[in-house]
Image 1 (cartoon, helix red, strand yellow):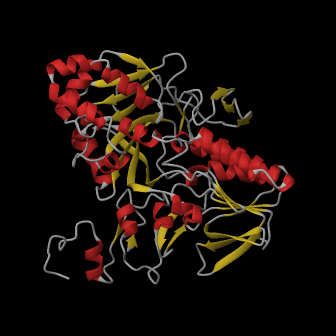
Image 2 (tube, chains in turn yellow, blue):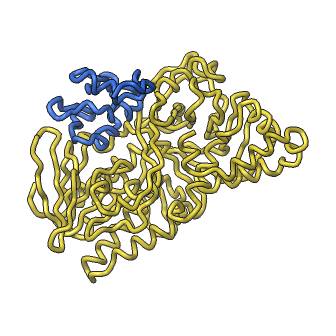
Image 3 (spheres, chains in turn cyan, brown):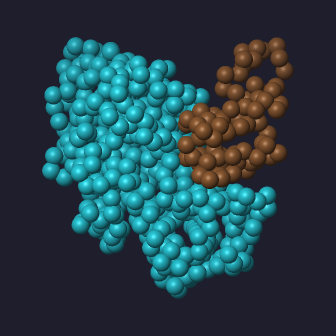
Amino acid sequence: MKDIYDIVVVGAGPAGLMVAKEMAAAGQDVLLVDIKKDIPLINRSCCTMLINEPNTHGETVHIVDNNLHFEKTGFTVKYSGQFVKLVKSSRLSPGGYKLTMANEKEGVAHPYTKEVILRDLLQEAVQNGVDILTETAGIKAENINGGVKVYLRSSHSRFLKEVRCKIAFAADGVNSQITRGLKLAKQRKYFGSYRVASYFLDEVDYPYWDSWITCVGKGHTQLGRGQIYMVPKYLPNAKPGDKPILDVFCGSPIGVPSKQSLDWCLQEGPFNEWFHNAKIVHKAACVLNFYTCIMNPVEGNIVVVGDAASFIETYCQSALVYGYRAAQAALKQLDTGKGYEDYSTFWRESFEYCWPGEIEKALQGFGLHMISDEELDYIFSLTDKEEYFGYVSENTAPRVMKEAIMSHIDQIKKERPETAKTIEKHWQSSAEDIVQA
Amino acid sequence: MVVDREECVGCGACVNLCPRLAIRFIDNKSYIDQVSCIECGTCRESCGVEAIYAGCRFPDIVLLNFANNPYADDTTTI
Protein backbone atom coordinates (compact mmCIF):
# COMPACT_ATOMS: atom_id res chain seq x y z
CA MET A 1 0.00 0.00 0.00
CA LYS A 2 1.21 3.48 -0.91
CA ASP A 3 0.61 6.84 0.81
CA ILE A 4 -0.73 8.61 -2.27
CA TYR A 5 -3.32 7.37 -4.72
CA ASP A 6 -5.40 9.03 -7.42
CA ILE A 7 -8.61 7.59 -6.03
CA VAL A 8 -9.61 6.04 -2.70
CA VAL A 9 -12.89 4.12 -2.48
CA VAL A 10 -14.24 3.24 0.97
CA GLY A 11 -16.59 0.26 0.89
CA ALA A 12 -16.60 -2.62 -1.56
CA GLY A 13 -20.28 -3.20 -2.12
CA PRO A 14 -21.86 -2.93 -5.57
CA ALA A 15 -21.37 0.88 -5.75
CA GLY A 16 -17.80 0.87 -4.45
CA LEU A 17 -16.66 -2.01 -6.66
CA MET A 18 -18.25 -0.39 -9.71
CA VAL A 19 -16.50 2.93 -9.02
CA ALA A 20 -13.15 1.24 -8.37
CA LYS A 21 -13.37 -0.95 -11.46
CA GLU A 22 -14.38 1.93 -13.76
CA MET A 23 -11.76 4.36 -12.42
CA ALA A 24 -9.01 1.75 -12.72
CA ALA A 25 -10.14 0.89 -16.25
CA ALA A 26 -9.61 4.56 -17.12
CA GLY A 27 -6.02 4.34 -15.93
CA GLN A 28 -6.41 5.84 -12.45
CA ASP A 29 -4.44 4.54 -9.50
CA VAL A 30 -7.16 3.20 -7.18
CA LEU A 31 -7.23 1.98 -3.57
CA LEU A 32 -10.34 0.12 -2.42
CA VAL A 33 -10.85 -0.61 1.28
CA ASP A 34 -13.47 -2.72 3.04
CA ILE A 35 -14.00 -3.99 6.56
CA LYS A 36 -14.72 -7.52 5.41
CA LYS A 37 -12.05 -10.14 4.93
CA ASP A 38 -13.94 -11.76 2.06
CA ILE A 39 -15.44 -8.97 -0.01
CA PRO A 40 -18.12 -10.94 -1.88
CA LEU A 41 -19.45 -12.55 1.31
CA ILE A 42 -22.94 -11.23 2.05
CA ASN A 43 -24.17 -11.51 5.61
CA ARG A 44 -26.27 -8.39 5.46
CA SER A 45 -29.96 -8.96 4.91
CA CYS A 46 -30.84 -7.78 1.46
CA CYS A 47 -33.70 -8.86 -0.75
CA THR A 48 -31.36 -8.58 -3.78
CA MET A 49 -34.04 -8.47 -6.40
CA LEU A 50 -33.71 -7.15 -9.90
CA ILE A 51 -36.57 -4.67 -10.08
CA ASN A 52 -37.51 -4.92 -13.73
CA GLU A 53 -40.01 -2.08 -13.64
CA PRO A 54 -39.09 0.56 -16.25
CA ASN A 55 -37.67 3.82 -14.84
CA THR A 56 -36.82 2.48 -11.40
CA HIS A 57 -34.46 5.10 -9.97
CA GLY A 58 -34.12 6.57 -13.44
CA GLU A 59 -32.97 3.34 -15.07
CA THR A 60 -34.53 0.39 -16.87
CA VAL A 61 -32.75 -2.91 -16.27
CA HIS A 62 -33.20 -6.04 -18.40
CA ILE A 63 -31.77 -9.52 -18.20
CA VAL A 64 -29.83 -10.03 -21.44
CA ASP A 65 -27.98 -13.37 -21.84
CA ASN A 66 -28.28 -13.83 -18.07
CA ASN A 67 -26.39 -10.55 -17.49
CA LEU A 68 -27.81 -7.29 -16.15
CA HIS A 69 -28.20 -4.79 -18.94
CA PHE A 70 -28.76 -1.14 -18.00
CA GLU A 71 -30.63 0.31 -20.91
CA LYS A 72 -30.48 4.07 -20.32
CA THR A 73 -26.95 4.44 -18.99
CA GLY A 74 -25.81 1.86 -21.52
CA PHE A 75 -23.65 -0.71 -19.77
CA THR A 76 -23.81 -4.38 -18.83
CA VAL A 77 -22.81 -6.10 -15.60
CA LYS A 78 -21.72 -9.71 -15.80
CA TYR A 79 -23.78 -12.19 -13.78
CA SER A 80 -23.04 -15.89 -13.71
CA GLY A 81 -25.64 -16.98 -11.14
CA GLN A 82 -29.32 -17.92 -11.13
CA PHE A 83 -32.45 -15.79 -11.28
CA VAL A 84 -35.86 -16.56 -9.78
CA LYS A 85 -38.78 -15.14 -11.72
CA LEU A 86 -41.46 -13.81 -9.40
CA VAL A 87 -44.78 -13.04 -11.09
CA LYS A 88 -46.74 -11.87 -8.05
CA SER A 89 -46.23 -9.52 -5.15
CA SER A 90 -48.73 -10.14 -2.37
CA ARG A 91 -49.50 -8.35 0.84
CA LEU A 92 -50.75 -11.01 3.24
CA SER A 93 -53.02 -10.37 6.23
CA PRO A 94 -52.79 -12.54 9.38
CA GLY A 95 -56.03 -14.27 8.36
CA GLY A 96 -54.46 -15.33 5.05
CA TYR A 97 -56.20 -12.83 2.76
CA LYS A 98 -54.16 -11.14 0.03
CA LEU A 99 -53.76 -8.00 -1.98
CA THR A 100 -51.86 -9.12 -5.05
CA MET A 101 -49.96 -7.22 -7.70
CA ALA A 102 -49.07 -9.35 -10.68
CA ASN A 103 -47.24 -9.26 -13.97
CA GLU A 104 -47.27 -12.73 -15.51
CA LYS A 105 -45.36 -11.74 -18.63
CA GLU A 106 -42.34 -9.80 -17.39
CA GLY A 107 -42.45 -10.78 -13.73
CA VAL A 108 -42.70 -8.38 -10.80
CA ALA A 109 -39.04 -8.85 -9.74
CA HIS A 110 -36.16 -11.28 -10.26
CA PRO A 111 -34.22 -12.23 -7.13
CA TYR A 112 -30.56 -12.97 -7.85
CA THR A 113 -27.45 -13.59 -5.79
CA LYS A 114 -25.50 -10.54 -4.73
CA GLU A 115 -22.48 -12.64 -3.78
CA VAL A 116 -22.09 -13.76 -7.40
CA ILE A 117 -22.35 -10.19 -8.73
CA LEU A 118 -19.74 -8.96 -6.23
CA ARG A 119 -17.42 -11.88 -7.01
CA ASP A 120 -17.51 -11.04 -10.71
CA LEU A 121 -17.06 -7.29 -10.09
CA LEU A 122 -14.17 -7.92 -7.72
CA GLN A 123 -12.47 -10.08 -10.30
CA GLU A 124 -12.75 -7.28 -12.86
CA ALA A 125 -11.48 -4.71 -10.36
CA VAL A 126 -8.42 -6.86 -9.60
CA GLN A 127 -7.78 -7.37 -13.32
CA ASN A 128 -7.96 -3.59 -13.82
CA GLY A 129 -5.24 -3.16 -11.19
CA VAL A 130 -7.17 -1.85 -8.18
CA ASP A 131 -5.22 -2.08 -4.91
CA ILE A 132 -7.47 -3.79 -2.37
CA LEU A 133 -7.15 -3.55 1.38
CA THR A 134 -9.45 -5.86 3.34
CA GLU A 135 -10.25 -5.74 7.08
CA THR A 136 -9.75 -1.98 6.95
CA ALA A 137 -12.29 0.64 7.94
CA GLY A 138 -12.54 4.10 6.43
CA ILE A 139 -12.85 6.37 9.45
CA LYS A 140 -12.90 9.89 8.09
CA ALA A 141 -12.28 11.90 4.93
CA GLU A 142 -11.18 15.55 4.79
CA ASN A 143 -10.82 17.96 1.89
CA ILE A 144 -7.27 19.32 1.97
CA ASN A 145 -5.47 21.51 -0.60
CA GLY A 146 -7.50 20.46 -3.60
CA GLY A 147 -7.29 16.80 -2.64
CA VAL A 148 -8.60 14.50 0.03
CA LYS A 149 -7.02 12.96 3.10
CA VAL A 150 -8.63 9.67 4.11
CA TYR A 151 -8.05 8.12 7.53
CA LEU A 152 -8.04 4.34 7.54
CA ARG A 153 -7.77 1.85 10.35
CA SER A 154 -6.93 -1.81 10.05
CA SER A 155 -8.94 -4.21 12.18
CA HIS A 156 -5.62 -5.42 13.57
CA SER A 157 -4.14 -2.04 14.51
CA ARG A 158 -4.78 0.71 17.04
CA PHE A 159 -3.39 3.40 14.76
CA LEU A 160 -4.94 5.43 11.98
CA LYS A 161 -3.24 5.49 8.63
CA GLU A 162 -3.51 8.55 6.39
CA VAL A 163 -3.83 8.23 2.64
CA ARG A 164 -3.93 11.16 0.25
CA CYS A 165 -5.83 11.14 -3.00
CA LYS A 166 -7.39 13.42 -5.59
CA ILE A 167 -10.93 12.09 -5.16
CA ALA A 168 -12.41 9.90 -2.41
CA PHE A 169 -15.64 7.93 -2.75
CA ALA A 170 -17.76 7.10 0.28
CA ALA A 171 -19.49 3.86 -0.66
CA ASP A 172 -19.66 2.43 2.85
CA GLY A 173 -23.37 1.86 2.94
CA VAL A 174 -26.43 2.97 4.82
CA ASN A 175 -24.53 3.49 8.10
CA SER A 176 -21.66 5.27 6.34
CA GLN A 177 -18.91 6.36 8.70
CA ILE A 178 -17.38 8.71 6.11
CA THR A 179 -20.69 10.45 5.38
CA ARG A 180 -21.35 10.99 9.07
CA GLY A 181 -18.16 13.06 9.27
CA LEU A 182 -19.16 15.40 6.44
CA LYS A 183 -21.01 18.71 6.63
CA LEU A 184 -23.55 17.23 4.22
CA ALA A 185 -24.79 14.89 6.92
CA LYS A 186 -25.97 17.80 9.07
CA GLN A 187 -28.65 18.65 6.51
CA ARG A 188 -30.21 15.20 6.80
CA LYS A 189 -33.28 14.50 8.85
CA TYR A 190 -33.39 11.34 10.94
CA PHE A 191 -36.63 9.36 11.35
CA GLY A 192 -35.59 6.28 13.30
CA SER A 193 -33.83 2.95 12.97
CA TYR A 194 -34.88 -0.56 12.09
CA ARG A 195 -32.99 -3.75 12.68
CA VAL A 196 -33.46 -6.83 10.61
CA ALA A 197 -32.91 -10.55 11.17
CA SER A 198 -33.04 -12.94 8.27
CA TYR A 199 -33.03 -16.75 7.89
CA PHE A 200 -32.49 -18.63 4.64
CA LEU A 201 -34.72 -21.69 5.00
CA ASP A 202 -34.62 -24.98 3.17
CA GLU A 203 -37.37 -27.64 3.14
CA VAL A 204 -40.20 -25.20 3.59
CA ASP A 205 -43.73 -26.34 2.82
CA TYR A 206 -44.63 -23.10 1.12
CA PRO A 207 -47.42 -22.17 -1.31
CA TYR A 208 -46.03 -18.95 -2.81
CA TRP A 209 -42.84 -19.84 -4.69
CA ASP A 210 -43.79 -17.39 -7.46
CA SER A 211 -44.43 -14.43 -5.12
CA TRP A 212 -42.80 -11.75 -3.04
CA ILE A 213 -44.71 -11.78 0.23
CA THR A 214 -45.12 -8.82 2.59
CA CYS A 215 -46.88 -9.79 5.80
CA VAL A 216 -49.06 -6.84 6.76
CA GLY A 217 -50.69 -6.53 10.16
CA LYS A 218 -49.82 -6.97 13.79
CA GLY A 219 -50.64 -10.69 14.13
CA HIS A 220 -47.51 -11.85 12.30
CA THR A 221 -45.16 -10.86 15.11
CA GLN A 222 -45.25 -11.55 18.83
CA LEU A 223 -45.28 -7.91 19.91
CA GLY A 224 -47.30 -6.66 16.94
CA ARG A 225 -44.49 -4.41 15.75
CA GLY A 226 -42.28 -4.93 12.75
CA GLN A 227 -42.83 -6.63 9.45
CA ILE A 228 -42.09 -10.04 7.96
CA TYR A 229 -41.11 -10.54 4.32
CA MET A 230 -40.58 -13.74 2.36
CA VAL A 231 -38.71 -14.13 -0.90
CA PRO A 232 -37.46 -17.22 -2.74
CA LYS A 233 -33.86 -16.94 -3.93
CA TYR A 234 -30.82 -19.02 -4.81
CA LEU A 235 -27.74 -19.62 -2.70
CA PRO A 236 -24.43 -18.48 -4.25
CA ASN A 237 -23.38 -22.03 -5.15
CA ALA A 238 -26.72 -22.95 -6.80
CA LYS A 239 -26.65 -24.67 -10.16
CA PRO A 240 -29.27 -24.54 -12.92
CA GLY A 241 -32.18 -26.78 -11.96
CA ASP A 242 -31.66 -26.41 -8.19
CA LYS A 243 -34.59 -25.52 -5.99
CA PRO A 244 -34.49 -22.02 -4.50
CA ILE A 245 -34.45 -21.51 -0.73
CA LEU A 246 -36.78 -19.16 1.11
CA ASP A 247 -35.39 -15.99 2.69
CA VAL A 248 -37.67 -14.97 5.56
CA PHE A 249 -36.76 -11.72 7.24
CA CYS A 250 -38.16 -9.54 9.95
CA GLY A 251 -37.57 -5.82 10.30
CA SER A 252 -38.55 -4.11 13.52
CA PRO A 253 -37.98 -0.73 15.15
CA ILE A 254 -35.04 -0.45 17.56
CA GLY A 255 -36.20 -1.69 20.95
CA VAL A 256 -38.19 -4.57 19.48
CA PRO A 257 -36.07 -7.70 19.16
CA SER A 258 -36.16 -8.71 15.51
CA LYS A 259 -34.69 -12.19 15.91
CA GLN A 260 -37.16 -13.04 18.65
CA SER A 261 -40.02 -11.79 16.43
CA LEU A 262 -38.76 -13.89 13.54
CA ASP A 263 -38.40 -17.03 15.69
CA TRP A 264 -41.91 -16.49 17.03
CA CYS A 265 -43.32 -16.01 13.53
CA LEU A 266 -41.77 -19.29 12.34
CA GLN A 267 -42.85 -21.28 15.41
CA GLU A 268 -46.15 -19.73 16.44
CA GLY A 269 -47.12 -17.24 13.75
CA PRO A 270 -50.31 -17.57 11.68
CA PHE A 271 -48.45 -19.56 9.00
CA ASN A 272 -46.18 -21.68 11.22
CA GLU A 273 -47.26 -24.91 9.47
CA TRP A 274 -45.10 -23.89 6.48
CA PHE A 275 -41.97 -24.04 8.62
CA HIS A 276 -42.36 -27.24 10.69
CA ASN A 277 -39.58 -29.07 8.87
CA ALA A 278 -37.58 -26.01 7.83
CA LYS A 279 -33.81 -26.00 8.18
CA ILE A 280 -31.84 -22.77 8.55
CA VAL A 281 -29.05 -22.78 5.97
CA HIS A 282 -27.82 -19.22 6.42
CA LYS A 283 -28.40 -16.27 8.75
CA ALA A 284 -28.09 -12.56 8.03
CA ALA A 285 -28.87 -9.28 9.75
CA CYS A 286 -28.68 -5.55 9.26
CA VAL A 287 -29.57 -2.17 10.69
CA LEU A 288 -31.04 0.67 8.69
CA ASN A 289 -31.11 4.23 9.80
CA PHE A 290 -33.81 6.24 8.11
CA TYR A 291 -32.29 9.53 6.97
CA THR A 292 -33.51 11.84 4.24
CA CYS A 293 -31.34 11.77 1.11
CA ILE A 294 -28.24 13.85 0.66
CA MET A 295 -29.43 16.17 -2.09
CA ASN A 296 -25.99 17.16 -3.30
CA PRO A 297 -23.82 14.07 -2.74
CA VAL A 298 -20.47 15.78 -3.41
CA GLU A 299 -18.50 17.76 -0.81
CA GLY A 300 -15.25 19.16 -2.18
CA ASN A 301 -13.64 16.10 -3.71
CA ILE A 302 -15.50 13.58 -1.59
CA VAL A 303 -18.24 11.83 -3.54
CA VAL A 304 -20.97 9.86 -1.74
CA VAL A 305 -22.39 6.93 -3.71
CA GLY A 306 -24.99 4.22 -3.22
CA ASP A 307 -26.83 3.66 0.05
CA ALA A 308 -24.55 6.12 1.87
CA ALA A 309 -26.40 9.04 0.28
CA SER A 310 -29.88 7.56 0.16
CA PHE A 311 -33.03 7.05 2.16
CA ILE A 312 -32.95 3.35 3.25
CA GLU A 313 -31.42 1.90 0.08
CA THR A 314 -30.82 2.41 -3.61
CA TYR A 315 -31.28 -1.30 -4.49
CA CYS A 316 -28.19 -3.23 -5.55
CA GLN A 317 -28.93 -2.52 -9.23
CA SER A 318 -29.13 1.24 -8.75
CA ALA A 319 -25.97 1.21 -6.62
CA LEU A 320 -24.28 -0.10 -9.77
CA VAL A 321 -25.81 2.71 -11.83
CA TYR A 322 -24.86 5.45 -9.37
CA GLY A 323 -21.39 3.95 -9.02
CA TYR A 324 -20.99 3.98 -12.80
CA ARG A 325 -22.33 7.54 -13.11
CA ALA A 326 -20.16 8.80 -10.24
CA ALA A 327 -17.07 7.26 -11.83
CA GLN A 328 -17.85 8.89 -15.20
CA ALA A 329 -18.48 12.24 -13.49
CA ALA A 330 -15.21 11.99 -11.54
CA LEU A 331 -13.25 11.22 -14.69
CA LYS A 332 -14.79 14.25 -16.38
CA GLN A 333 -13.94 16.32 -13.30
CA LEU A 334 -10.29 15.22 -13.47
CA ASP A 335 -10.26 16.01 -17.15
CA THR A 336 -12.09 19.32 -17.35
CA GLY A 337 -12.45 20.47 -13.72
CA LYS A 338 -16.24 20.32 -14.05
CA GLY A 339 -17.96 16.97 -13.76
CA TYR A 340 -19.46 16.38 -10.35
CA GLU A 341 -22.55 18.36 -11.32
CA ASP A 342 -23.47 15.62 -13.83
CA TYR A 343 -23.61 13.05 -11.06
CA SER A 344 -25.41 15.14 -8.46
CA THR A 345 -28.01 16.32 -10.98
CA PHE A 346 -28.63 12.75 -12.13
CA TRP A 347 -28.94 11.68 -8.49
CA ARG A 348 -31.50 14.35 -7.63
CA GLU A 349 -33.52 13.79 -10.78
CA SER A 350 -33.51 10.00 -10.78
CA PHE A 351 -33.65 8.95 -7.14
CA GLU A 352 -37.31 9.19 -6.18
CA TYR A 353 -36.72 9.78 -2.47
CA CYS A 354 -35.05 13.11 -3.29
CA TRP A 355 -38.43 14.35 -4.49
CA PRO A 356 -40.84 15.96 -2.02
CA GLY A 357 -43.54 13.67 -0.60
CA GLU A 358 -42.01 10.43 -1.92
CA ILE A 359 -40.80 9.21 1.48
CA GLU A 360 -44.29 9.51 2.98
CA LYS A 361 -45.84 7.83 -0.04
CA ALA A 362 -43.46 4.87 0.11
CA LEU A 363 -43.83 4.41 3.85
CA GLN A 364 -47.62 4.48 3.59
CA GLY A 365 -47.32 1.48 1.28
CA PHE A 366 -45.32 -0.66 3.73
CA GLY A 367 -48.37 -1.41 5.82
CA LEU A 368 -51.56 -0.08 7.29
CA HIS A 369 -50.36 0.64 10.80
CA MET A 370 -53.57 2.21 12.16
CA ILE A 371 -55.81 -0.63 11.05
CA SER A 372 -56.49 -3.63 13.28
CA ASP A 373 -55.90 -7.17 12.07
CA GLU A 374 -59.61 -7.90 12.00
CA GLU A 375 -60.25 -4.87 9.77
CA LEU A 376 -57.26 -5.80 7.62
CA ASP A 377 -58.64 -9.30 7.04
CA TYR A 378 -61.90 -7.68 6.00
CA ILE A 379 -60.23 -5.24 3.56
CA PHE A 380 -57.98 -7.91 2.04
CA SER A 381 -60.92 -10.31 1.75
CA LEU A 382 -62.36 -7.79 -0.73
CA THR A 383 -59.17 -7.79 -2.82
CA ASP A 384 -58.30 -11.46 -2.28
CA LYS A 385 -59.62 -12.79 -5.58
CA GLU A 386 -58.28 -9.90 -7.66
CA GLU A 387 -54.91 -9.19 -9.23
CA TYR A 388 -53.68 -5.68 -9.85
CA PHE A 389 -50.99 -4.89 -12.39
CA GLY A 390 -47.80 -3.86 -10.63
CA TYR A 391 -44.25 -4.64 -9.61
CA VAL A 392 -42.28 -5.09 -6.40
CA SER A 393 -41.28 -1.52 -5.84
CA GLU A 394 -41.09 0.89 -2.95
CA ASN A 395 -42.10 3.80 -5.13
CA THR A 396 -44.96 2.57 -7.31
CA ALA A 397 -46.48 -0.33 -5.34
CA PRO A 398 -47.95 2.01 -2.67
CA ARG A 399 -49.99 3.73 -5.37
CA VAL A 400 -51.28 0.39 -6.71
CA MET A 401 -52.18 -0.69 -3.17
CA LYS A 402 -53.98 2.58 -2.52
CA GLU A 403 -55.94 2.34 -5.77
CA ALA A 404 -56.84 -1.29 -5.06
CA ILE A 405 -58.21 -0.44 -1.63
CA MET A 406 -59.89 2.77 -2.77
CA SER A 407 -61.69 0.88 -5.56
CA HIS A 408 -63.65 -0.84 -2.76
CA ILE A 409 -64.07 2.23 -0.59
CA ASP A 410 -67.79 2.64 -1.33
CA GLN A 411 -68.48 -0.89 -0.13
CA ILE A 412 -66.25 -0.36 2.94
CA LYS A 413 -68.02 2.92 3.73
CA LYS A 414 -71.35 1.15 3.61
CA GLU A 415 -70.36 -1.94 5.60
CA ARG A 416 -67.70 -0.51 7.94
CA PRO A 417 -67.84 3.30 8.12
CA GLU A 418 -65.26 3.44 10.94
CA THR A 419 -62.75 1.40 8.95
CA ALA A 420 -63.24 3.63 5.93
CA LYS A 421 -62.42 6.67 8.06
CA THR A 422 -59.22 5.02 9.37
CA ILE A 423 -58.17 4.11 5.85
CA GLU A 424 -58.56 7.68 4.69
CA LYS A 425 -56.62 8.87 7.70
CA HIS A 426 -53.82 6.42 6.88
CA TRP A 427 -53.02 8.15 3.59
CA GLN A 428 -52.45 11.37 5.56
CA SER A 429 -49.94 9.89 8.04
CA SER A 430 -46.46 11.36 8.24
CA ALA A 431 -43.18 9.49 7.80
CA GLU A 432 -42.38 9.79 11.53
CA ASP A 433 -45.71 8.23 12.55
CA ILE A 434 -45.17 5.24 10.29
CA VAL A 435 -41.54 4.60 11.22
CA GLN A 436 -42.39 4.74 14.91
CA ALA A 437 -45.54 2.59 14.65
CA MET B 1 -20.28 -4.97 25.61
CA VAL B 2 -19.22 -8.38 24.36
CA VAL B 3 -19.96 -10.13 21.06
CA ASP B 4 -20.98 -13.75 21.08
CA ARG B 5 -19.05 -14.72 17.97
CA GLU B 6 -21.03 -17.95 17.65
CA GLU B 7 -24.25 -15.94 17.32
CA CYS B 8 -22.80 -13.03 15.30
CA VAL B 9 -23.70 -13.41 11.63
CA GLY B 10 -21.19 -10.81 10.48
CA CYS B 11 -23.48 -8.16 9.01
CA GLY B 12 -21.12 -5.39 10.14
CA ALA B 13 -23.88 -3.02 11.26
CA CYS B 14 -22.48 -2.37 14.74
CA VAL B 15 -19.01 -1.52 13.40
CA ASN B 16 -20.03 1.82 11.92
CA LEU B 17 -22.56 2.66 14.63
CA CYS B 18 -20.13 2.49 17.56
CA PRO B 19 -19.53 6.06 18.78
CA ARG B 20 -16.12 5.03 20.13
CA LEU B 21 -14.97 3.13 17.05
CA ALA B 22 -14.40 0.27 19.47
CA ILE B 23 -15.70 -2.45 17.16
CA ARG B 24 -13.45 -4.18 14.70
CA PHE B 25 -14.39 -6.63 12.00
CA ILE B 26 -12.10 -9.60 12.28
CA ASP B 27 -12.57 -12.74 10.16
CA ASN B 28 -15.92 -11.32 8.95
CA LYS B 29 -17.33 -11.02 12.46
CA SER B 30 -17.47 -8.25 15.03
CA TYR B 31 -15.04 -7.98 17.91
CA ILE B 32 -15.31 -5.33 20.61
CA ASP B 33 -12.15 -3.76 21.96
CA GLN B 34 -12.77 -3.82 25.73
CA VAL B 35 -10.35 -0.95 26.35
CA SER B 36 -12.28 1.45 24.10
CA CYS B 37 -15.85 0.29 24.89
CA ILE B 38 -17.83 2.60 27.15
CA GLU B 39 -20.77 0.18 27.55
CA CYS B 40 -23.21 2.59 25.92
CA GLY B 41 -25.23 -0.26 24.44
CA THR B 42 -25.60 1.18 20.94
CA CYS B 43 -24.31 -2.02 19.36
CA ARG B 44 -26.51 -4.19 21.56
CA GLU B 45 -29.60 -2.25 20.51
CA SER B 46 -28.65 -2.43 16.85
CA CYS B 47 -27.82 -6.14 16.65
CA GLY B 48 -30.42 -7.92 14.51
CA VAL B 49 -29.60 -11.36 15.88
CA GLU B 50 -29.06 -10.36 19.53
CA ALA B 51 -25.45 -11.49 19.56
CA ILE B 52 -24.19 -8.62 21.75
CA TYR B 53 -24.60 -8.58 25.51
CA ALA B 54 -23.31 -6.56 28.43
CA GLY B 55 -20.11 -7.74 29.95
CA CYS B 56 -21.17 -5.78 33.06
CA ARG B 57 -17.96 -3.90 33.58
CA PHE B 58 -19.96 -0.85 34.73
CA PRO B 59 -23.30 -2.39 35.80
CA ASP B 60 -25.05 0.89 36.75
CA ILE B 61 -24.31 2.67 33.49
CA VAL B 62 -25.30 -0.41 31.58
CA LEU B 63 -28.73 -0.56 33.16
CA LEU B 64 -29.52 3.11 32.56
CA ASN B 65 -28.77 2.81 28.89
CA PHE B 66 -30.94 -0.21 28.20
CA ALA B 67 -34.33 0.10 26.56
CA ASN B 68 -35.80 -1.95 29.41
CA ASN B 69 -34.30 0.30 32.09
CA PRO B 70 -35.94 -0.83 35.34
CA TYR B 71 -35.67 2.71 36.75
CA ALA B 72 -37.30 4.44 33.79
CA ASP B 73 -40.52 5.27 35.64
CA ASP B 74 -38.82 5.98 38.96
CA THR B 75 -39.01 9.76 39.30
CA THR B 76 -37.24 9.80 42.67
CA THR B 77 -33.87 8.72 41.30
CA ILE B 78 -31.60 11.38 39.92
